[in-house]
Image (cartoon, rainbow, N blue to C red; front, side):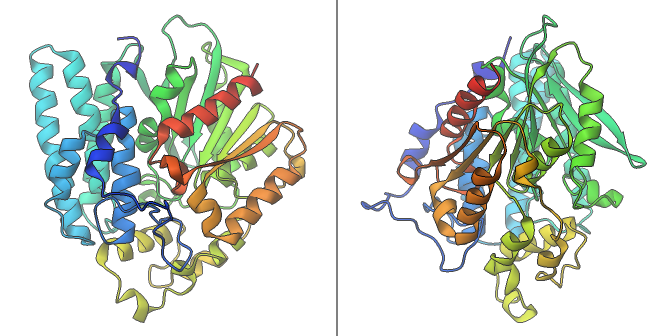
Length: 427
C-alpha cells in the first residue's frame, strides 16, 4: 500500500444522515459567551463541549481513517450527556474491542486490516483521554497504549510511519515522520503543530493522508505542554520556537526533505507557535495557521469561560466541560482551581508579524471568525503586519459545515484551502 488514501472514507454523506436537520437559515447554534469550543451545528449531545468534541474531533477524523461512523454512534448511544467518566469508559471499551480485531488480523497475516484497526484503536484510546484529569492513573496507560498502537500501525504502512524522538531539556519530544514516497527523493514537507490540547497522534488524523496524497512528506510532534509532556514537568512556555527548532535540527538533514520547501502548519495554539518558529528559524519557508494567534494574552482574556470561571460557577458545570477547562490549566502549569490564571500565564505567547518574512496563510472557520471580536482582530493584525507580500486570510463557510475551531468537522475543505495555497507558495 503506497498511501493512506486507500482507507479514506466519504464521511460527510454518512454524517449528514446522522445529524439533526439544520436550520433553514443555517444560523450558528452558539452560546452567548465566546467559547473556542462552541459547536455551530448541533451534532448529538446537549453539552456544548462534548458536542463540539464529538462532531469535530471524533466524527471529523473519519475523513482520514480515524473513526468508523457506526462505532462512533454505538459509543455515543451509551454515554451520559456531559459526563466525563461515561465518555472515558465507553471510548476505552471500544478501543479495546478494535485493538482485539487488529491483533486477530495481524496474527493471520492480514496487514492492511491490522493497520486500519490499530489506527482506529489508537484514536479511540486517545478519545478516552479527553476530559481525564492528570492524576487519573489511566491517563499515562491509555496515552502509551494509543502511541504503541500507532507505532504498530506505522510499521505496516508503505512507506512506514516512523516514530522518532528529539532530545530536549533532559527528556525527549515524541515525533512522527512519513515520506510521501519510498524512493528517498527530496520533496516538499509539512511540519504539523498542534495547540493546547493535542497529542501528536491527533495530527496524523487531522491531515496526514491528505498531505501524502498531494506529495508532501509529513512530520508531527508533541511539544512541551502537549501529549503527556506535562507529566514530565514540561509545560507550555512563551518561547515555543525553541522546541520546534530542535525538531527542525533533527529532521533537516533527511534526504527526503527538500530544504527549500519545508512548511509549518499550526492549529489552535499552534497558530501562534508556528509563526513564532518561522520568525526565528529561516529554514521554515512558509507558514499556515488555523487561525493566527499574534498574541495569546488578549485572546485568552476574551474567553469568557476562562475569565469568569469562579469556583461557584465551575460547580454548576458538567464534568466533561469542567475537566476539559482544568486540563488546559494543567498544561500551562496553572493551578486547576484558578482558571482565570490562564490569562496572565499567556503573557509573552506572541510573535511579531513584521518580522515574519515568509508567505503566510491564515484559515479560520466562519463561526469562530464571527464568534469573537478578538479572533477577528488577531487575523487583521496578522495579515496587515506580515512582511511578505504573499499573505492571505480564508474564512471557510458555515453553510458547508466548515465553521468550528480548527475546521476539524470538514477536513476536506480545510485541506483543499491549505494545500492549494501551499502548492503555490512552495513552487
